[in-house]
Every structure is written in C-alpha cells, then in structure tokens.
Length: 193
Image (spheres, rainbow, N blue to C red):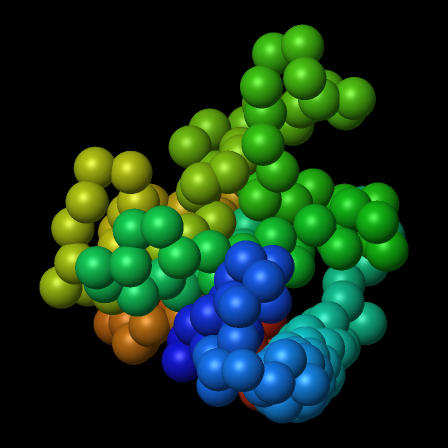
C-alpha cells in the first residue's frame, strides 16, 4: 500500500545517508519513518485481530463434529485472483487437530508429509486444492466451481460438508443434506441426515 512505499522511501533515504527534507532533516525523517511504521503495525495488528475473530467464529462448527468425522471443506475463492491465498484456506486442518478427523485441505506429496493418506475413498476430495472452489461463472483448470464440487461429492464416503466463505450455489446441490450449524460465512452440512 501507500504507507509501505513511504516507509521504504524514508528507509532508503536514511540508509543512503541523505534526507528527504534536505540539510538537517534526518530527525524529521526518523520521526516520519517511525510514525509510518507504527501506523502500519497498528493496521496489520487490527487486521489480524479481525481475522482471528472471524476464524474463531467459523471454528465453532467443530463443536458439532464427532471424533473421527470425515469432512469435505469447500472454501470460496474469487475469480481472477490466481495468487491470492485466502486466510481461511487451511482452517479445516483444525478438524485433524481437534477432532482427529479427515480433512481434504492437506497437501499430499510423496516423501514430504509426516502423515499418510489412509482414507482412499476420498477420491478427488483427498487433498489440496480440492477444498478451494470458484464461483459458478469462473472456470480454471485447477479448481472446480462450487456447484461442480457439491454435485460430485460422494455423500456416502463423507459425514459432513463444511462451506467456508462459499460463493453462491444452487440450493438443489445440498437438498439431500441437513444444515447442522450456521455461523459467520460458514455452514456445516451433514451428508446423511
């Protein structure tokens, strides 16, 4: 952002031994640089606090999951933002940590993981990036749309579907499931009510 550019400009001037304000402006450079740094730090802290509150609200869904639940999570991802990583893209990993269950958001790379994928019925929904879904009007070779994922989900192989910041979807794709929890930007469905 703009505050970053100003911070870098002041930092480069100070490191370069010059002043943005000429002559004896080094003290002013330091004051402005310090003020920009504090503003930036406060903004990032505030942003992280908002994100933490949002994530804690979504994690309340875990209270509805039994130990060992098999969950497919679908996290919305915007069109045209190929490199943006949503903050909640691996939030479902808490299913493994808190409920000792299956979550489809983990990377499965031979020789890298300390855990092995034992749940072979998961198919396409076995690993990352199956948890990331696009709005129905977006198509890319890596991610399915929300309706494609919901329609192709093997309901008999999973206990729950957790939608997190999901884009709008066709209600008929979840008509056979029962919503057991709703929270801020999040719905937990039981696949076999």
